[in-house]
Image 1: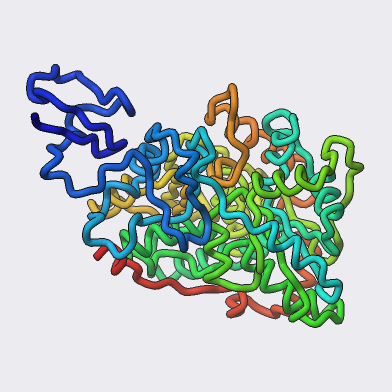
Image 2 (image 1 turned 90 degrees about the vertical axis):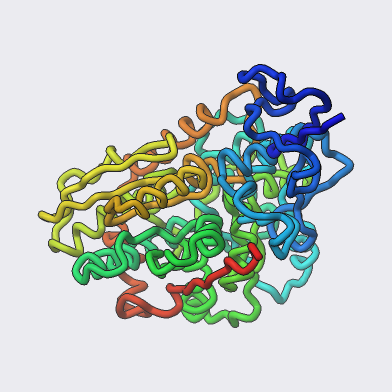
Length: 473
């Protein structure tokens, strides 16, 4: 009897496949007949799950917990556009992975999870000769409370900082400051590219999963990426150089820990260096619980000074469209020497996965796009290949941006869409309430450039990319 295998979840149908009605769907994952292939012709292992290589730096898989639901494979293929776009028999690894961690969010049993590093960090923190510096990404402050019974989008900045101090942090910085640096560099880079007309559209580069996706599947387009490091990587460089010099601390004694909404930052830390540990939100929450810290009862604590204050523009990095909006605010200033009268670019705010707009920037009409979710990125790149023109494109691997990152809390009794919306609303409220809403007006940023960086394009703040398509075979 012939067997037909679902190419999404691995479900095997035995019987007269051809006689099934055209609207028949896979009973396991719900896809149509077109996704089935005769078992003898199938060019894949018959597994319902996504394989995770043992040396994956970001996520891991425990086979004993797998309930064979197929969620991980469906997400990787239909939302992230990764699985199904390579030949398993040809590629040089079991599974091509961009480290986004969306499969771990979709896994109901915890079979796929973040790769645990907090135990190793906790052991290291016994060494009193080390200086432990923590930094927290913008999206963390509107999601961490959910792990302790808080509402979606609850802003818990003060308790978050207090928890890190309870865990043993010597200093706690706001990665929003790193986002401000990124915008200074990225807005300058955008203006220079617009003047030269070269390497347009400029793609944002702060999402490591997106960068890796481009390097693997579209290496011919890596010149369009901004050369700017991510906010975490930029702040990390400044912690171990500028801040260490200001404080008179030996940089070799600094252990830099990034708290992120993202699992892919674990891989980025290996590539870029400068930060030693990455703990996604769920991992930090697990550590806090393991230590018996009552998060809800903590008294608020503030970020440390010198690099602890970021602008409202830096905060909105945590949501899809935020990088675009922040960059446009400062690019306008670089072009005119004046600030916008109206700072909001609401047309680029979208959690749907794709939005395009035309913005007037000091007399220059720019075609911009904001894309999140890698399957939507494939659609955008296809349009560009067909001749569609854009000047500036923000890309995030996870739908909704960082607030929907693979390291964020899992949503129970609420849809992912609602969770993203509530977190996003909280992020924008922080911007609206901020006394400084433009990164170039942040006095700490001004001091950094005056006393240390001196000018743009410092090598400490920029990176390079490489063609990784060879792993596809």
